[in-house]
Length: 269
Image (cartoon, rainbow, N blue to C red; front, side, top):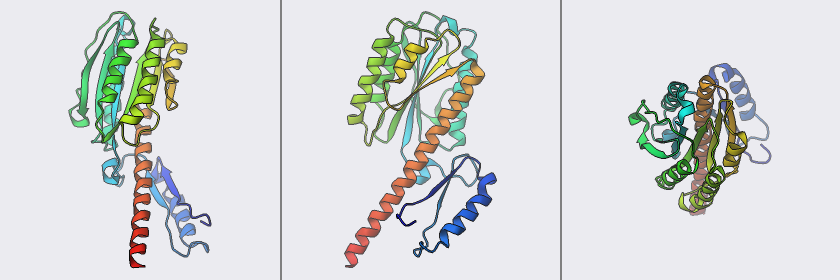
């Protein structure tokens, strides 16, 4: 309070933390160093009847780009991968992120865009299956092109999943690194590229996929033993986007309010 710092409470279970939030809010409000009666801002991070959507807070949406391995070794796991993808979409809807866009790149030895910048309400639930070899570079090229086509109202977020290794992994990592450098000048208020890389099953090359993840300082490498774990990871990534958007929107609102107050004060003077 003495340092004039705003305080936010971010809760994943508002029902369980409501008592603590109320007590902390009362102590904060009645503190001797708080004569202006500033209040704590509570931000619920889970869906609920009283939760705030990203749109309500004025935040930008995300353009989520799935890059999914559909090579021959994924044949038996593919239905579970599609279920995990649908679980991600369901969580976005639960989080009321209806401004988000979704694209899908499916790859084996080649790559194709099967979903392109669809709104959450229009995303298809079915994804076809290929079944050939594994190449990362064509998939990276398609994903990068989609990321660069992201509307100025959105920020790209890539989810790259593979169960194998490829002879062009270094070139794919270089392509993502080039994207990370170029899109910062192309996308408004862009920071490092949000890049989630998942090694699926025991046959995935952790070394190659970690290198792809390291293309961005916001890159994250994770491992999934099966489709159930993959589904959990997808949901965690979906929730992470909700946390970031809510915090950025609330902080942006505070800055805007502070600037408006200062301008009003200067005008009165």
